[in-house]
Amino acid sequence: MEGARVASPNETGADGGRARLWPEPYRAAFAICSDADDSTWERFDLVQRLLRTREPTPFGPGLGWEGFADTFFGFTRYPAARTLGQVSVFADEEARVLSPHAGEIAAAIRRGAVDGLHGWGDCIAVGGFRRGHAEAILAWMRREGLAAPVWVNHGDRHNVQNLGAVMGRGDDPARAEVYNADLVRQAGCRWHWLGDLSRVPGQGVDHPLGERLTPISPVTPAGRRRGLALALARLYEMTGASPFLKGVHRLGWQFERRTPLLTRARLRDGSEVWVFTRYGAWDAADFATLPAVVNDDTLAALVRSGGAMILYTHLGRRPPTEAGVAALRQVDKLFREGALWVTGVPALLARYAHAKGFT
Ligand SMILES: [Zn+2]
Image (cartoon, rainbow, N blue to C red):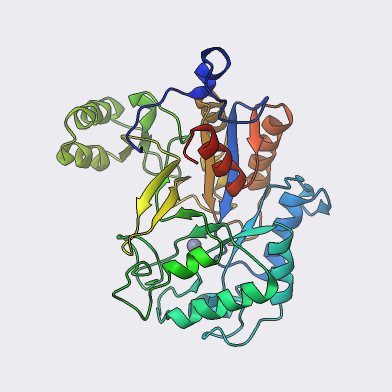
């Protein structure tokens, strides 16, 4: 599926009889998938008002994107985040005592303002995750009648809760003390992000080779020797030989052979899940660096591509910035003009899966 070649349905949709990828009149789609790291309650609340409502904020009136939803932590063990006051459902490190914000988080999930588990909890630097933590959070979700359709793998190598071969052991039934993939299912998760990050504006559609060659960092762009990087990328595309790709990387460029939005993956417990790709850059993933990944150029490329952009970011990591909010207002302008569908992650992925006949 991932390797299947597909024409952009928006190129063929109107006249070729294929299903449109996105609702009329939109030509491409945009959603934000924001990790909850370092988000205090005050910043969480400000991001909600700024993105979901039209209320006045220090950055002007909110955008009113009803589709926007945040992610949440069940508990926090990472000491730096605890010191900071990172918001989670449970106040303690063992997921036993509800935090003062548990009720507000439940209400936010219930009204669709939060839709994703950012892992069960934050175990950066110290680890210590156990299946019992996930059971406690799931029991709370059941008591409150909540579901979280989005799962986002989290953090560093200490997060053994993660699913997938690269990070974590959460889907390995042989590791019973940390196995939790069954509980992720029971929490209502349908769409999983396991670490795939693309630098190409527009996932889920094909791109010519040149568009799939991007600077590794948008903050300190490579910008040089693009011709050589392009030649190496072409050789890699033809042969699949990794030394060519390494050569591309050494020149400061990234090359993506494919740009899928949604693929099917088999976990170690034999279950199959939907895995989505986020767009962005590891070093441009908060409000301050938002303009490096969302700007006139990348938004024009996205609309041209007819694909989707699910933005990887951490909107609650630091206070919003004027420039970051301005970047979101550029997105909003395209939304209002009918070019870009701004929605939530589950709605975007469900629409795409349906249009492609995946479900
Ligand atoms: Zn994170």
